[in-house]
Amino acid sequence: MRFYWIKPIPIHQHLRTVTQPFHTQNQSLKAFNTFGFDVVAHQYLPIELPEDLTALFQKHAFEKQAFGILGGGSNITFTQDFSGLLLHNRIQGRTIIEENSDHVIVEFGGGENWHETVLYTLEKGWGGLENLSLIPGTVGASPIQNIGAYGVEIKDTFHALTAFHIPTGTFHTLYHSDCAFGYRDSVFKSEKKGQYFITAVQFKLSKQPVIKTQYGDIQATLDGWGISEPSIRDISNAVIHIRQSKLPNPAEIGNCGSFFKNPVVDSQIIPALTVQYPDIKTFPAGEGLTKVPAGWLIEKAGWKGFKRNQIGVHAKQALVLVNYGGGTGAEIIALAKEIQADIFQKFGIELEMEVNAW
Image (cartoon, rainbow, N blue to C red; front, side, top):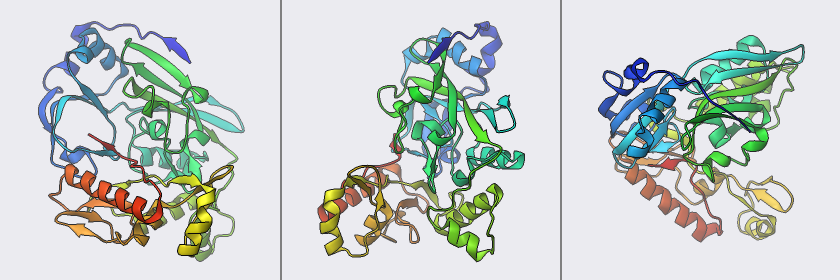
């Protein structure tokens, strides 16, 4: 891990970030969370430059009130209005850090849209992120969650990130070994939770990409299209097709994608479950461990398509909880807890929520 100071900029140059019109009181967050919950932030501030954070630190803003960091709003369930200062990561930018005939290390601003970032890498012919197409959210949030899909995770291409260390007001560079990546997990969700505002992320991408088609329905989709030698663009198109066929569009039905993690369990419990449920789906997850799809568990328990008032479980993908319009975050969390209890009662397996409840 490296530490460095950003040269302080006079406070008067940052008036746009700490006063009107950019610093908003009682800002509606309905458009800023993919569930579409109609809540407000008592104080809302878009962060467009890393130096904006330095200015806030110099004004002791982090000491005066509770604060939160918002990215794409795709991994948050707002259960109530946000009473503190909500910082919205809107930092943009794309910069090549290193390039040779084999690979490129490219840096993206933390506020860049994730899917648009993936499409940009495809246009350049850089491989590594194609299996992560159409995941909602921002670049800055991707290492926090170690987002993953179809056999690929952020940790596979992650090189480094730059983040503002809120307790000290300094900017740090963190490398792969600093982040403690795990399944939908990182150091930013444990001992360093709430300490960092990620301003930029670097990825090491390949100019000679290795195509990964073995996970999910990618190969079957490509076969159906008559593609025997797929490009990274073909992989992306297949992933987009699969996701659109299974997952609801947040612009049409409020949701945050996968609500629960796929549980990883002791392999010794699988034989007994297989006797009771011969169609159980499992995947190896390391020595003595097995991953069980959360969606399969929820569907098998009878929750798929469940609806209560304006919330429910999606009819096509049991892993997705939905807000049909007018529902609340508190109702979603209550439903999630009911599902967790039922899955444990039926299968003896604990489901962990993938989203953050605020």
